[in-house]
Length: 206
Image (cartoon, rainbow, N blue to C red; front, side):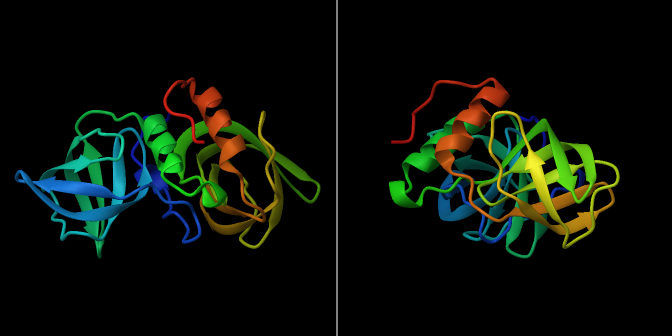
């Protein structure tokens, strides 16, 4: 799993139709506050929304559905969203597993996962290699030189994973956000993430 912050180096907000992690309880000064939604997470931090009024520099703990309770510092606040930096890395694969298990089987949707791997991008007669920065059931962020403009339809090749065609929804320098025309099922995406990240074990969604 990629050891980086979920908002680092130009990461974009997860789209509205992306999957979500389960809510997390915020422990502040020993007191449990209202739950916050986890919009995006990596082993080093998370983007939270709602539930409590965050303050930059605040020290708190986040109680996850896996039973993990990482200590964290609020790194930034924008509106009702906040970026928190964990003091110790968390097990993201375990969190993904538990999130899927807690969803109804017929509506399970993969949340956005921060990771790195090589991909091949094609539009028209152009083919280029790119780096996957994050992926969810409905989209991904790519990094490469000479990426296509917003509105371009693309095909994406990733070893071990069948990816629907997509559309470039935004482009900034050497980064682009791709929205897929079909949903990536958790039953194919989760095993691929485990294999790519060298992870294993944990609960299997059933």
